[in-house]
Length: 172
Image (cartoon, rainbow, N blue to C red; front, side, top):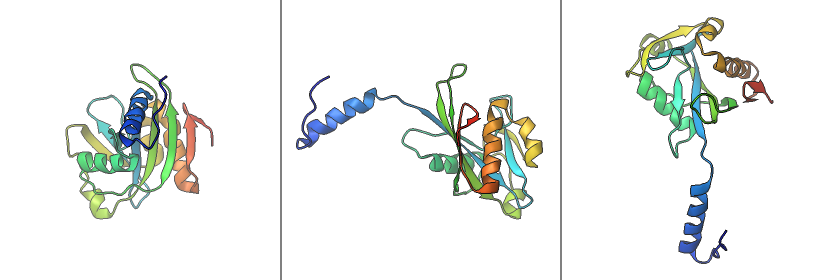
């Protein structure tokens, strides 16, 4: 390890920090939203590129916040202009299959107006269909890996307390 330069040489200091940053671990980050209608039903989507239904959302891009990613994903895929609300769940998901580990967030996507609900439709080829469903009816459509996160998000909506899970297990 080389001796760090002094911060009074900004160019050398920034180069030193950039070198260290380039060696740091990178983590995948995903964000989903729980979007409801006035009847308490939740929005679920059927991605065209995988077998199970999912919550609206997707992967966070480099240098993008989870809330900005949630806003972008629902705009691109559903044509909705939403401002994601409070954190409901964050889960550390261990490596599985070809995937590295990740942090998965679920944010409160709020409640759609009757007009927004009536106009819902997929806006790109990533989604084949969508549905507003009773939360209990939506759960079996979701991949089993998502069940603990989904359940925790619904509990957080009910009691106002965000949850942290590690590999599907509640930590707090």
